[in-house]
Image (tube, rainbow, N blue to C red):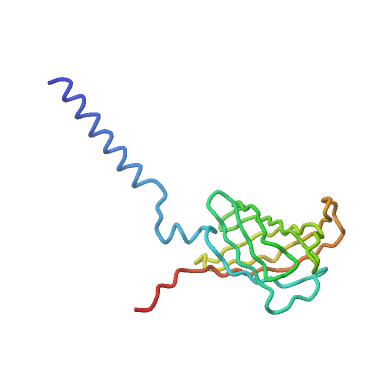
Length: 165
C-alpha cells in the first residue's frame, strides 16, 4: 500500500511538472512566431556609395533556418547561391553574414562576395529593413580585392497562400 502511494505521488508530481513546463515554455503562438526571423523572405537591395547602379529586378530569396543557417538565391547571373549565418543582435534585430561565389560569363571563378547586414524586424515581423548593408569582394585566393560597397535591404516575409477553393 505504501509503495502504491509513493508511486501515485510521483505520477501526480510528474504530471504537474509537465503541465507547468508546458504553460511556462515558449509557445508557437502567432505572437511568438512574429518575433522570429526564421522563414523565407523576398529581399530587395538598393545601392549606396561604392555600389554600382542596380537594376530594378535585382532581388534575392533568402531562407533563415532554425539554428542560425541561411541560404540565399540572388537574381545576378555572376553570383551563385549563397550560404551564411544569422544570429540575434537585439530586440527584433538580427546580424547576418552571407557568402556567395562569383563567376565571369565563361564560368571562371572570380572569387567570393561577402555581404553583412543588421536586419530590423517591424512590429508584425512581416518585413525587415537594413540601412547598413555592406559587401566586399575577395579574389579566388581569399584576398580582399578592395571592391566594397554599402546599401540598404528590405525584406518581405513569404507567407503560406492556400489554394482557392
